[in-house]
Amino acid sequence: MIKCLTFDLDDTLWDVSPVIKNMDLKLYQWLAENAPAYAEQFDIGNFSHLRSHVVTEFPKIAHSVTSIRLKCLEVGLSRAGYSPGRARQLSIEAFAVAIVARQQVTYFPHVWQVLDQLKAQGYIMGAISNGNADIHKVGLSKHFDFQFNAHQAGVEKPDPVIFKLMLEHLQLAPEQVIHIGDNPIADVLGAQQLGMATIWVNVLPQQWSHEFQADQQISCISDLPAAVANIVAEAD
Image 1 (cartoon, rainbow, N blue to C red):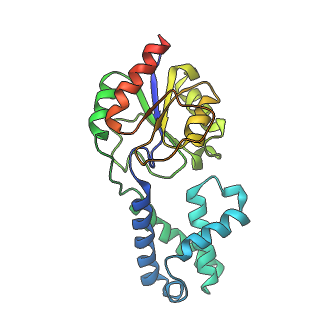
Image 2 (cartoon, rainbow, N blue to C red):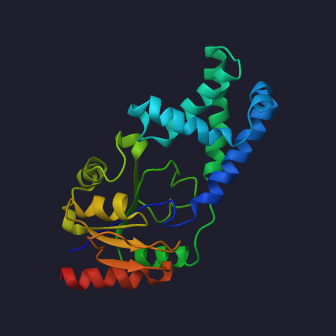
Image 3 (cartoon, helix red, strand yellow):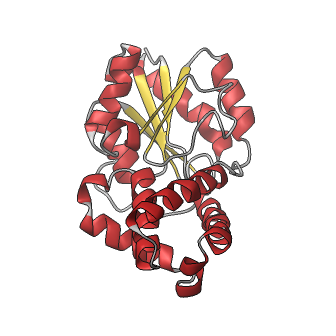
């Protein structure tokens, strides 16, 4: 019997691209005012170069977008000429600005109506994400009962550890959970490896090029209740 629905967040409930662009802009504006040496030497595009460098040089933190962003800021500020201690302090202050902007999301159409409907059906619902959106700060507290992310878990999807943490927390078996997400590998394959049912959310159109298949797929969030119902019917 299906008891729980777990959701990815970025590109599943909202488009993350404009969120990151806004976050980078707010962050760069803060750096221009508070760490001018950085803005004098680097443009906003340097963030992506720093990320590539950090992921390569510090693979142990590659699972955590929070740790990556903090290290990027620290490295970038050091390159701009700030002392190690000052770079570290500025990176913490800058990240505090960035993480606020990170929570400013615009939901896909029908999300709220669908979450209301599924919650009313009695499902336990929560998030399993690789990103650092906070369910309490993006307005999901009413609908979601829990959240696990890669920073907390120490691994990112599709690593089974993050899914196992959720199952242990809820004391549920994999066959009692449906995982819902946009990423074929991180979400669909990751959950299927543990025996969870899956729904592929393809609101931002992408081609499926894998031998495995999700149990259901949708191209509009309004179709999610029907997809859940189909899996429930098959499970029964």
